[in-house]
Length: 408
Ligand code: AMP
Image (cartoon, rainbow, N blue to C red; front, side, top):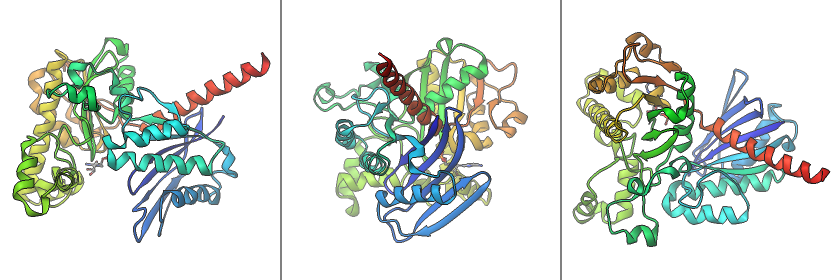
């Protein structure tokens, strides 16, 4: 019994959910954005109420304090000690972390060390973890890695075809991301299809602002579209996805304001993808509005986005030599029926057919027709719940060990 916080701390934001465990009920959730800027925002939701506030938040330490005070203020907890565990989403686990882990000083140091693989996220992650450890010393801190689910990839899948010494000496390889989400939806898909996961071949399409496609065989990740960092793979809201690496050198040598690798990488991470092609927005809803009003570049961005998704999905259907089901999840995958329709229409040769009625209804479940060879599902992802469950597993283990020692 206890309350568990699931935390996702980014470079300037902190997203959280408070769960009552083991019941898995959501007590409250919220997000802090623009931390460290002039005007930070705070949003909190619980029991049908929504509150938002603006104030300057200097750093993550102040943010965590504000979060805890907010929980007290709204009567969601009476005492900090009611929070018995905090689970943290960590983007890069490298080769060191193949499963979730209880955080101590050593683990924290290792997470910081791995920051070079995902500098944007991994520097922010340990700062968040440290702040919670300081302010909630009684709560069990657990790190849940976005890469862990992909640690089952074989060498032939995770190696880049470059001299192998760069893997042997520098660990340069594909690590993937969104692992918690791909894991969660693949498990639920097996339940919905009423078949054991170890019999199933699945492709999971996590399509949000960041997007990745994963090939899953018997419940394990065999390949995924993101790479050493979350920049690789399909086209995304602001990220290019795969491009010819020679473009980088060409930009450095020919574009004045992009005269170094960091500037080009910033362009590819933050100004490319849907935003870069449309010149308008990285957000699918805004892109759809612009398309509806006849904006040509918005339409081009959409068409490129769909084609790149189709190509990765088809590639993984080939890699798995056929699939039982395709899963759509995340902001766009869960909510945009036109994206789903256009992808499936383009892949109908593989024996996929969706019911227009079920597709429009979306929600949670199978949207393919009865005769479709490949089942198509929409499954809302819930990374926060997986994180809370991981914390709960460690808490139970810890409790059982302590208890058995006590009576021995
Ligand atoms: P995520 O990163 O998973 O939060 O997803 C964010 C993306 O989902 C943004 O591009 C949103 O525009 C998109 N999105 C959210 N709701 C909808 C919706 N109802 N229709 C289309 N796109 C949506």
